[in-house]
Amino acid sequence: MLNNAVVMGRLVADPELRTTGSGISVLSFTVAVDRGFVRQGEERQADFIDIIAWRQTAEFISKYFRKGSMIAVQGRIQTRTYEDRNGNKRKAVEIVADNVSFCGSKSESGTNAFSRDDSYANAQPAPSYSTADEGDFKEIPEDDLPF
Image 1: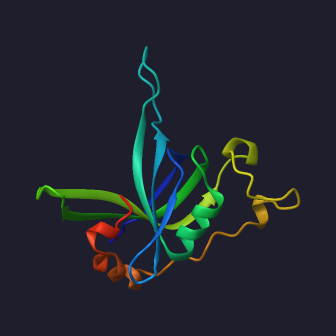
Image 2 (image 1 turned 120 degrees about the vertical axis):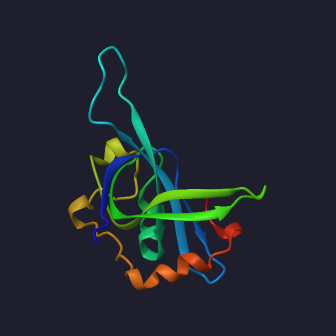
C-alpha cells in the first residue's frame, strides 16, 4: 500500500511548538496551497492543508519558519476521529510530516534565522521519525493536541 503526500505552500500562521505530557515535541500548522488552475474571470483558489510534525522535525520548523514562509512538506496522510468538547464526533485529516524543505529565497520567506554566511544548501532538515513512533500520537490526550 502507498500513502505519500507532497505539498508546497505558505504557512498561514506562525507555528507554535508544544510538548506532550511525556516530553515529545509536536507542532501543527496549516499550509495554503494554490490550486493549479484558475477559472476564467475568477481569482486563484487555495486549499488549506493541516500538517502535524513531531520531535526534531517539529523543532526545526519552529526555529526556521514563520507565517508566510514557503515550505515543502513530504509525509503521509493520516485520519483520526475524536470527540469535541460538546460530545460531537469529529474526523480530522492531516499530513504527518516526515521531511520539510525550504522553498524560495530568504527575502520571500520573511525569516532571518540565518546569518549572512549561512545558505539553504547547508541547512539540513531534522531527522524524520520512523513509523514505529506512530503509537505516540494515540497516547496524547485531546487537551494536549496543538489544535
